[in-house]
Length: 170
Image 1: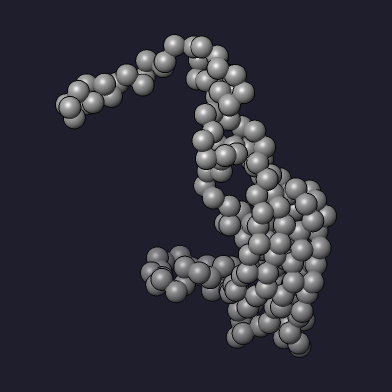
Image 2: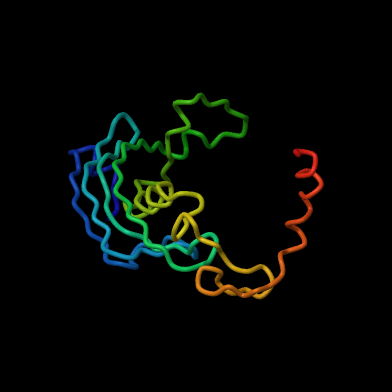
C-alpha cells in the first residue's frame, strides 16, 4: 500500500492491511512466518507524514548458537514521522538534535507501508536470538549440535588462553 501525500492533503488515511506469510522480504536472516496484520492511520502534519498504529506477526530466525530455526512473535505499536528527503539534501553538514533522530525520510510523493512495517519488525527483534537459554551451540571442531549429541571432541585450545588469568584470581 502506497501512502500518497496528495491523498493525505485531502484527508487522514485509516488502514487495516494483512500481508500473507513470506510477502514482506525481511532479508536473508529473517523470514515472515505467519500473517502480518497492521492497522493504524496516516496524516499529513505540515510536510511530514505522521504514521501511527500497530502490527502483529511472527518471524523465523536462526538461533545465534546452534542455527536451529526460532520463531519470534512481534507485536508492536508505532508512532512515526517521515519528512521529505529534500529537506536534508544539502551540500553542507547539518547538525541534528536528539528529537530529529526519530524522524525518517521519504522520496517523492510518499512511502510504502510495507517498507515501514519491514523496518519496524526488524527493529523489534533482539540482536541475538537463542532457541533456549541453555543452548550449547555447535562444536567448533566437528560442527555437531551439542544440544543433540556429545561429540567428545577435546576442548578448544582457545578456551585455555584465559587459564593464566584464572590462576591469578586464586
